[in-house]
Length: 115
Image (cartoon, rainbow, N blue to C red; front, side):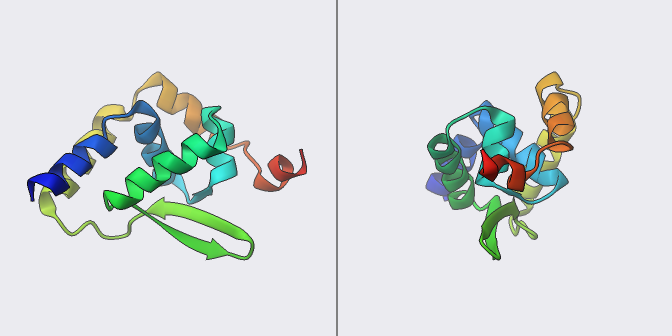
């Protein structure tokens, strides 16, 4: 149990991963969209997504040629759910989170792939 809890806290210990979670709270996204918003390399974003997935926070699904990431529909542990709720609340007014949310309205995966 302690190992699982450490994985949860490790997943939440990086600002980029917190930003990803807040973006996925709005809608499912592919790696290229997250990369565009965060300004990180695709390999770095993929590593962050793997950590979040192993911690049980997100899931992926295929939509045509796209692999989308979304928040996991049900978080089974009540403690993790409470932690998530608290994090979402305290991050709501963060300036970087607000910037990400604004960018999210303009990001277009098809345009990104054309470049």
